[in-house]
Length: 263
Image (cartoon, rainbow, N blue to C red; front, side, top):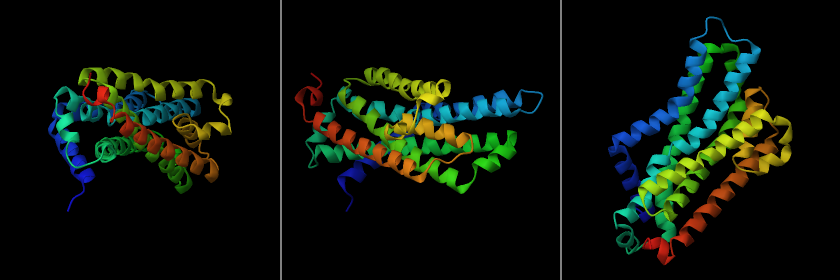
């Protein structure tokens, strides 16, 4: 017998795949980074030098960070804000399941698309960098670097899904959720640009801050340097704890009448 969490997650994923416009929008956001980097490189008449290669890799790391947030944005805006707008949220919570189960099911569906976007973005950048910078690609494809990348980015995609679900929970309509989720994208973008322009200001303490830590780690990885395993594990653990805490807070928010009924 299926659990309520898996039933809710499966329904949300099926509904998301039926919405072709949202899928096309998410795919465009996901592949935007590899396409831009690819166009910048293939339109040049000469091969990239060391400085240009560093710039391209820095751009790739920023777009990779953004993909964890943009992948689940379209499905997130409809998960709870859409339920409230359609007046189907109250009948949903009247079913024999807890708010935490409801939140978990919705979160799994958003996280699935965030992880898929991250995977597609990684594949896109691997193809572009492999074609344009084959030597650097061979350096970046080493197991320690790939392992550090996955340990940092997979939990971030799940944290991004939890943050987007929290925003959808407190918004009264899909339009309002879309507005606030668009503002959320500026968090990784701003932190990424800050690290790019002021790399010396981010020390080891940054690995204890989700999103900022991932960007610092990516800046080391594109330089071909794997950070200490302890730093990566700390970043992974802090990100997972933040994700679980945010999900717990979201489930408690859903108990409030003004949130549940949209008053």
